[in-house]
Image (cartoon, rainbow over all chains, first blue to last red; front, top):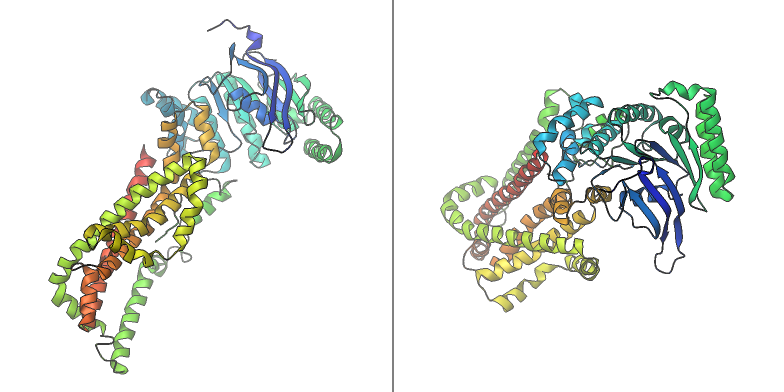
Length: 280
Length: 290
């Protein structure tokens, strides 16, 4: 293990991703993005859909190769998936034939670690997310929110140092989503991991993160790196404060300013909707 | 009887607690038992109604044969068939042995070949592009017409009949299994990759169990196809087996004996199909438990 400066736990340097498929024009999904994340910080990457933020996350996860640039986690350059990283996807991705508990233990099986040592940890995680009575239920017996709770537990059970989340709650209804955000913060505080959270919801990003990185389309790059000043532990109530609204407004302007044409109008509409939600 | 099984897949059912109710209803399958929760008739209906319908049709048959004075050589009444079945049962059971064994052998061979080829297709884009369209095309031709060719190639031996039955049972399995392996949830594979799983782990823990329902639905069709193949083989070239017996009885105008052999054939078909369905239950349960 190399010695790493604590403020550069995740280091992304000029990372680019260009998709070339056959004769079609090359698509630049991520264009020369650079940022660093100190150990233990919660980062939200905020941007409209299709801006390449998921691609960026997948590159940090080692699931997508970089076209140019360099990404290092804990001082080691990412060349493929690694077990010090836990991932949550947009859908819960539970195996339909396994119970909630067995789904949480799935990474342990894959990593060939002793199951008996982790069974209690898995149970405790499920209890923490309020699924005490659902450990032996199959995914089709759980609601959408419950399934994502199982997915949180699965991402945490093997003690990853870095937690990557790709719009994990975007398929949930607004009320469940708020619940899940509070739960996620609670879990994160408990297990203190470095976290990278991709979202297209301004409100979600501001509520969750220590820092919000704003990513835009054309160029597919980061245009703002904003520290969020709210103290932890946070409750949903901070969403009503004028300061929260001001930050959301500022982020919305940044997203709008960097967009032109139809795509920009659509995303600003989404941003306006998000701010409207706050006012209500 | 549900041919197109699938894991009660969670992708179709997303959303809040209201969905739990919907999931419960969907879980009953395509032939859902609809109404009357709690009422006695409602609960007994799935078994009782088809049985009663069958009995009524048999009774109608019995009365029609008597009422219209249909000669027994054309259509014997069910009671005559039952009597004949009882009389020739020892012979029939003897003849059923080669038919059953050949069918099972053909089914096993078709399953091994079909699943193996489907796995190969799922891993190689080249193989898939090369073979899959041709498999679908072959599936569409009436393969029964090829039975005499197998006699030309392999003679009138038992192997010839098993080979032909394997041939027609193979297609539903390979196509169904190939579809099963192709429709694996891509995010489940991505999850595997993110955990640095080996390809063998990925196959055993995700790909194969995901494809299982499709494989089994192909196997159920293949089981019936294997029996059809063996019977046709026996029609063409055999001196034993239920197919041979039916042909023999037909040449002597023993219509009741034909129906008796058909009844036994039905029973064998149901038993073999049931065995596959049971195997599916056991295999699925074993995956759920691990």
